[in-house]
Length: 441
Ligand code: CMX
Image (cartoon, rainbow, N blue to C red; front, side):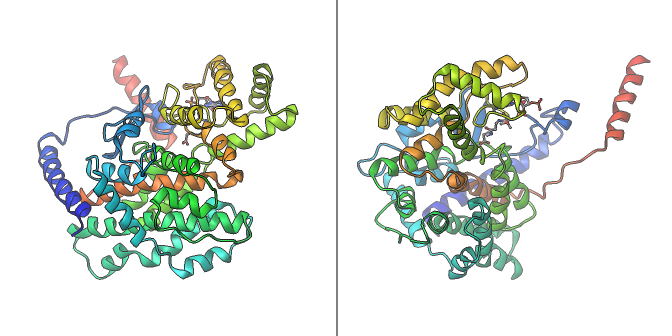
C-alpha cells in the first residue's frame, strides 16, 4: 500500500472507532437549534455536517487542519527556489492532518504525474462541444466523461465490501486530481487558442505544470498558480461546492460524479463564478468611465449605480466571513511583492477602500468586506490570462483538493446517505401557532 494511503487508513480507522463509541455515549446530545430564519434563510450556520479538512471562523477566516494561510505559506514545502506553498503539500495535510516532509511532497507530486493520463474519449468529447460553450460546462462534461474509469464504480458493481469504499474513493480522487490540470488546460487552449495545445512538462510540479500547459510564461505566474491552487482548495463543508460534492457522494456516487456535482454549484455567480463577474464588472466600470485609473469618487458613483440597478457587487460579502477574507489578503500581499504597480490591481485596491463603506451604508449587508474572488482576476489579467470566462475553472481545479480529500474521509468514516427533512409553509405555521398557544396557557 502507498505511504499516504497507509497513513490515511490508520488515522481514519482509529477515528471511525472513536466516533462510534462517542456516538453510543453522547448520540442524543444537542449541538444546535434551528430557527425559522435559518429554515427560510439557506440554513446559515446550522451545524449538521462533519468536515475534517478545514474550518472557517467568521473573523479569522479559513484554517486548514488548524493552520492559517500565512502559516501555510511558511510551513508547507516549496518548489526549488520558490516562495509559495506547493498545493501537493496542502492535500497531504488535509488528508492525514500532518504537514508533509519535502520527500513526502515530492512523492505525491510524482504520484500525480504517474496518474495524469486522460482517456482519449475525454478529448473527443471536449472537441465535440462548441467553442463558445462556457469553460465550466466543459469542465463538468469532461470530468463526467472520465467516470468510465471510476475504480469505485467498477468495484461496487463487482460486489465491493463496504469497508473498502474508502480505498476505491482514494484511488479515484488521486487519479481525478492528477488529471484535472491536463483537461483544464485543454479546455483553455481549445477555447481561446485555436486548439494549439501544450504537452505536459513532467519535470514540473502539479501547479507549475498547469501554468505551463495554459501557455502563460514566467516563474512568477507559476508561483502565483501554486498560491492560488493552495488558497482556493477548501472552505469547510457548508459552502455550495463542498456541500454539493458531499451530498452527491453520500449516495455512493463515485468521485467523478460527486466532484461534478460540486462544480455545477461552483459555476453559480453567488459562488465561484463571482471571480469572472468581478473582472467583468471592473472592465465595464473602466469602459463606462473612460479611464484605466478611476478616482475613488468615480468608483463610488459606479458602485452606487450597480446597486441602484438591483445587482450585487461581485467579490464582496460572504455567508460566514465578517472580516476581509484572508484569501483576498494573501493575494494582495502577493501583488504588493510581485506586481506593486499593476494598473488593474490598483483599481482592486481602491475598490477595497471604497466599497465596504457603501455596503455598510445599505444597512443589510452582513459582511461588507472583499472575498477571495475580488482579487484573483486582476492578477490573472496582469500575467496575460485575460479570458475571464475561464477563471472559475482555476477555482475548480483547486477546490478538488479539499472536496475530494473530504470525500475520502466521508467514505472511510462510513457516513450515511444525507437526507434532511423539508417542511411546507403550512407545517411551519402550525408549529408556530402551537408554540404560541402553549406559551399563552
Ligand atoms: N452587494 C450588494 N448586496 C449584497 C452583497 C453585495 N456584495 N452581499 C450581500 N448583499 C445583500 C444580499 O443580496 C441581501 O439582500 P436582500 O436582503 O435584498 O436579498 C442582503 O445583503 C443580506 O445578505 P447577506 O446575509 O449579507 O449575504 P448572504 O449570506 O445572503 O450571501 C453572498 C452571501 C456571498 C451570496 C453575497 O454576499 C453576495 O451575493 N456577494 C456577491 C457575490 C460574491 O462575491 N460571491 C462569492 C462568494 C465567495 C465564493 O463563494 O466564491
